[in-house]
Length: 350
Image (cartoon, rainbow, N blue to C red; front, top):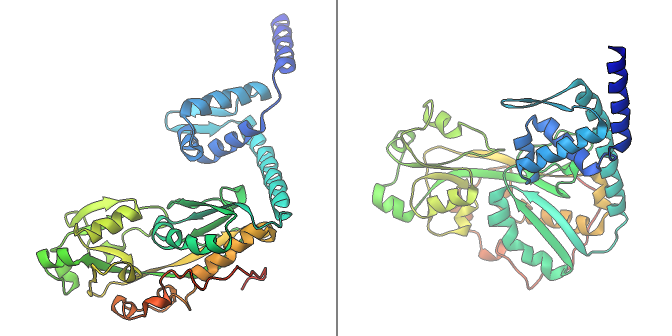
């Protein structure tokens, strides 16, 4: 028995001597998998194949000479060694991001890449069409616009700036309220001509609804308004995409809750007055260090102007009916390239 143990110890020492040093990218991958508690979910988040995740975790375990995960039918669970290593890995990751932000903060040139994560509807229908304003005055900026309902982790530098519906609670982040998004039921003129105009909450039960489910969206809002447990039977279409939701309503597939500014985007949409109104606040968040980067600071100030409740009244806290929004002169909200001026930014936040 002692000889066997001695031979095992020798093999272990030899393996440790020949194992390559841990790869930093593999360590970051390990942190993602540990937090997701699933190699498959980690692969989805990192946009990698599951086989690549497994191979690189195996490589890291070999380099560290320790088993990091117990593989379970529904995911993975950290071993005691994995749990201990995770704390060190997180500190390494945090230091790495601090280093990258420090380098970024020294960049005073209004050129290069700025990464913005934003909810799909706001990014597609509001921000993207207006980026031409920013490009006219800052032609050397490259904007990477990630339109998705999943919030980006700006602390982990998944984006420089995030615009989202959920307010971040991490004290290390700078958080600014951009405005409020008011949601109101709409249908197309074609739908109204075919199925009639609902006049009450009870009337809605005889119509078809377009339902959207996605991260950051509150579940069950329509069902609570209608006084039913779930809207099955009256939902004609369900989607996780704001773009599909908007176009389904616009093309007459049913009634759906849209941002009130949809009234100024399409003349074919009709507001449905049945007493329903919902709202969510719009938050911008970023790490304070990136504010020192000229290109990121330009983008921060431009976003604040693009969601200005003074310029665009549908982002005010108080609700304004869509029919009143349509009475606004087009010059007050349409994209205007003639009078755009170079961005002047102030590092002080409200």
